[in-house]
Length: 337
Image (cartoon, rainbow, N blue to C red; front, side):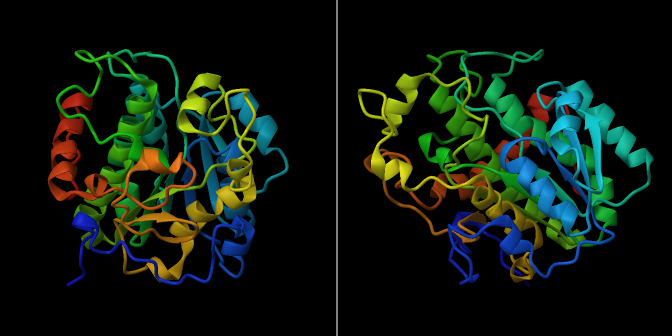
């Protein structure tokens, strides 16, 4: 019987042969995805765009749901095997509409890559009153996977990949007040708990879905130069994180650790396609390998120096509790049957 990753039981590198400088193209080299169908949220910008490109060039049909379909068409022009659909993760109705259209096509779904997200935004709430980072970065994932479950199950060998972040180390999930209704809003805490939730979701999904040959993963892509993710962030947040000095200059040690977009997409592609993971799931990955448990303190390493995954984001009781809370917050009873 395969083991699950509760409490980080499987969080040990497996010597993949790749590292933090590996590119997505190097990871996909020699892998044939002809006949496979992938969905990549946020697949028209940043590391999502690179993920889309390499999967499509390896033969997959890649569907990119996007808030701005015109922008998506422009950014994806020239890439083969790509379809563009409308969807906004903060709007539950658009998730349902997208999923219903896909299911009506009768197609299988081999790869679902939950790449889209927002980061370090001011306090905003969706139509349900849910804090925007939690709604977009996690609950949108939960709803999309739940709605697309029939197509994932029929694929008989699907993978769900959640692009998380080392930022999960900023905060555990706050079960008593996830929407900042009774505590002061801090955007870093909101971001951190949304990424912790993404890790917990991959952990619990894998445990429930592996009997249907569906595996799930979460990952830190690295800190990437040249993406739009932190476009709303205030410079003071970067200083607080230790990325910039008091004069607003990026610290040299931080600059040296930044990844290119091609390198940033590599771990996503590795989780989605590596045969080394055929019998392993529910793990958190970084630098194209399974990460180690991090028992240290995030703040001691000024952000980018921190590696690994916090035990609270792989805790069995947290994962099961979050699954139940997600059902309550979304009204979607995701039964993996």
